[in-house]
Structure formats: structure tokens, C-alpha cells
Image 1 (cartoon, rainbow, N blue to C red):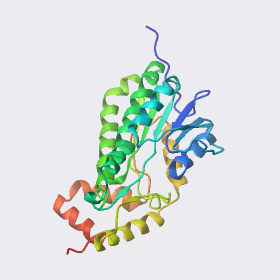
Image 2 (image 1 turned 60 degrees about the vertical axis):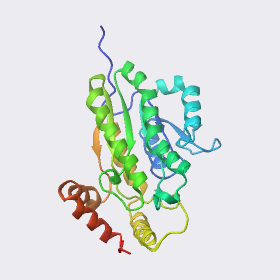
Image 3 (image 1 turned 120 degrees about the horizontal axis):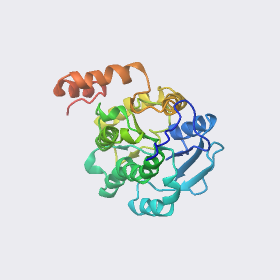
Image 4 (image 1 turned 30 degrees about the vertical axis):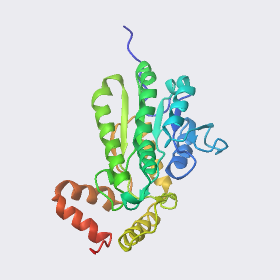
Length: 278
């Protein structure tokens, strides 16, 4: 049987195509710019069918929080997905606040958006990548996967699941030449906080945590910095884990999450986010 052709390590193959979900803003948009500059043909997804951006060859309509629309997208784009060389699972938003204050459909939608859709898109592109002997799947996880954040339990849980999914796939798919990159990003200036889903009137504890969280996001490095680090890893055909961001968030915080007793870690996080007990 003929040997499979693997993707080049240092530059994209001719007509290599990347699909970036949520490519209209933030890190997704910056990734589209960076990938196009490196010679990739970039497709994007958006809830807005009229979305346009110079670095995106075409936008495909997808509401990643809606199971029915995801099913439609997968059926209508089956042939295209088979041909994708790079899949970047980027789309997402936070769901901030007391869990009981969010409607049940909002919780379901958040899990669909952050976890279920990346799993199903990966399932759709995998046969084509295997047949060509290579490809890359990028998961935009978060530092929140290992370092819990107050009133973002849904987000943290979904990102932890995404990171574990990436690790599981990396363990079994390496023989087929497919790489899985788990990007556990720190805080970047992306408008993430402005697009956050918040439910009801915030309590004093929620307001204190929100103020600290918003300050961290607004003071973070620009989205372009994250995009450059991720695309360097893509061009090098890297798998594994990548943690772009500031030194404390990407080095010190994960180390603390791994080494500190759980009770002490949570106490320190509460204190940092000014969560005084009632």
C-alpha cells in the first residue's frame, strides 16, 4: 500500500484551506488575518450570513449554539469539510453569573457552543485528514480549563472538557498524521467581556468578581499576539498544548492549580476576585 503524503512542516501546501469558526471578531478575526498572510485559504463561520472580512475567502452561516443549525451546517457542507486541512474551533462566549439565574436553554446553548460543536466539527473533518495523511485541529480552550473562575462555571467546565477531548484525540490519532493543538489562552483584549451573557441583576459578590474580571480582560495583550503564537504552531505542524498570554497567567497560575491543595487554591481565587462572604 502506498505511503500517505504528510503535510509540509514549515509552509502550507498549495491551496491549503483553514476553517475558522467565529472569524468575525476577536482572536478568530486575527487568526484569519494571520493565516491569510501565511498563504492559507481561509473560510469562516458566522451567525450573520452577510459577514465580510478581507482575509476570509467566504463566510458560512452557522449558529454554533443551536443543535439544529449545526446539523444543517454539517449536512450542507459535508464535501467541503472533507477537504479542510486546518480546523480552528474558535467560536465561543462566556455565560456569567449565578447558575440558577440562567434559563435552562441558555445553559444548553453554552454547552453546545463551547463543547458539542467543536466535537462534531472535528468528527466531520477527520476522515478527510486521515485520507490525506495529515491535518491539524486547533481547539481554543482557556486557562479556565485548569484555573476555575468565579461565576463562569459553565464556561470553565466546557473548556476543561475541550482540553481533555484534545488530549484524548492526540493520543489515538498521531499515527494518521493528524495533529491536535489545545490552546489554553490567558486573557486577551477581544471584546469577550462585552459579549458575555449575563443573567439578571448582579449581587454584590458577582459585581466584585465582574469588576476584577473585566479589568483583567481590558488590560490583556491584543488578540493579534495570540493569533501569531497559534499560527506559528500551525505552520510548524505542532500538536499538544499551547498557552499564549502573560507570564503569570500562563506559567504561575497553572502551576498553582496543579500543586496547591484544592481548598487553598479556591480560597486564593476568592480573595483575588474580592468575594467577601455574606
